[in-house]
Length: 292
Image (cartoon, rainbow, N blue to C red; front, side, top):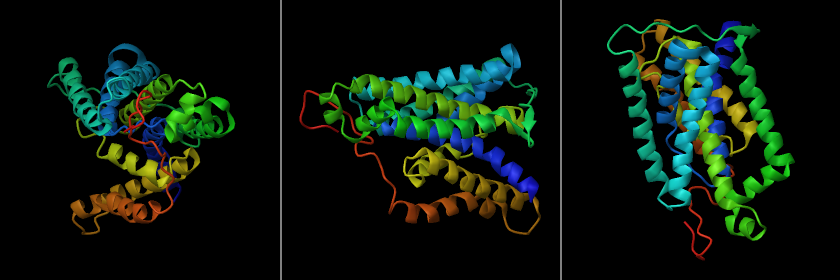
């Protein structure tokens, strides 16, 4: 039982970083759907930088910067060019995923990839990013609901025209939220080779990015509920992995479906009470009465 709890807490970290990044962007009205690709990009960059140039900490920082750059592209394309957020997000998903594979093949090639040193445990068998992820969730809750700047960001995602009339810079807020959100998503991807496999592979993300989108809705776009939901999603993931190696006689394809089936069942009920930002996925034009 203790092993299951330890594995669940570890498996929670990528879900938590990516879902909180999704929430942060969404609170400003930017609906990012490139999570799967940004996680791949973060995993590749985090692995390669850690292996070749600077260790895990530098790998995490460079991965975060790369994710923030892609998030800024999303913010720029949808805020300044007013392009469709879903279309741009899908394009960035393919671009970031392709970039990840390209970088890996240029640096490593077809050779057997060496393993990087995992993040060291600091207490209770958990590495530092576990506590960073939990602390980040608490910090985001405090910032969004207890500070003026956080309330300004939330107002942009609810009613940007009203926020603009109060002197809030809607464009800058959306750009900042999109960049920070993209950075968190890439960190969630970089955690995978540093805590689980020790190497990068094109299938390392395994659908976690798509589940993180569902997790943002499940948590009602609130950091504290996303933290709780991340534990549930991680527990389903660990259960599926344990069932695959337990020899219970069920085809592994059915076992692999467990996290997604559980997610679907939960989302059926979660959508009834999820508080989605009113301007989520819409573009704002201060010169027009019609926005979207």
